[in-house]
Length: 491
Image (cartoon, rainbow, N blue to C red):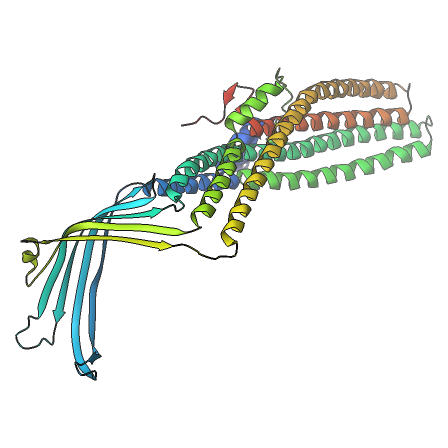
């Protein structure tokens, strides 16, 4: 085997591996690919997922407040060793050494009474008292306990937060689920914007590279004409200047493309070594959005639509709280059995009946109009919320109306710019051929080239406006108009 054959045999695998690595670092994406990847892997999408999870557990916490709670409370232990001041029968004081320990445990099953805001509980408790310095003849350990006890704590005329939370929390949770879908659609819209920022830079680079090739070719032709004396030096210098300008334009386009690529990669999580190529989304669907249908979908699906109702309920709750804070009245009642004994088992032998009813009352006799002022403030705030919500509903409808009308008009503009791009491109080819045959001047060719580039960019910008408007309309209505399906489906 010759040295050339050995070198080829050893070097070919390296070339194959290099080709495969480079092929793996090139990726082509459509607009749908970029949007899908952003919703699956972007940090913004992960943030929305985390917010949704937090709202879910907040709702679970609310639900848990209305379920029975089994609680164990107590002191374990409470040890004391000190000299305590004890008053004697004659009024004097004596300092008596004390060495004691107390253990107090209570097990209770609690249940909220949400319609009234009260608390009902069934409890059982045990206490053990140890006196390590007993008097002669006194036991060292004493036991007491409540085998069973039923308690009721009921506020009267007070603000019932359980009642209002039952109205507000489900709405807030439903809002959070719709907020999540809206947040994901915002991610889609941002991905579409970054997609077109990179695509415009990609198109600009393609235009710059093509213009440089054409200008260099024209320069060769002009130089040949100059050498045979059919053109003048000023025209040759003009074309040479255009070549230099084309090189500068290509350098700027490359820099803009690298900057746009960095933003797109960081948003959707693509490796920096991956070369991205985007496909122009020039296939425009036959889509005409009905304004009334869009407004109906927005009120049906958007979180803001639920927010209007929630804000009014919150204002009502504030009025109810101001009314409940005028005075406090509570009823506490308990019924059960208790006992004391020297042994723990004797507590349950023959317990005694234990009953307690207690009512507390706190009513301001003279508050100089404080309660009335508090009530009037809450009522005024409620009216303000109602007026604000009415205006927000109008703004809500107007925004959707404007966006739908704008979207429907963008399609007509898109068709015009698409046709203009095709006409300008064809005109440039004709002007270029006529220039090569000597029938038009270099100035006419430059004008045709500028019109070609301008109309190409206008077409791509029209595509960007159309698709970003479409994704924004999806966010406003939570509806996929292309596939005719809801983006948010209530569970």
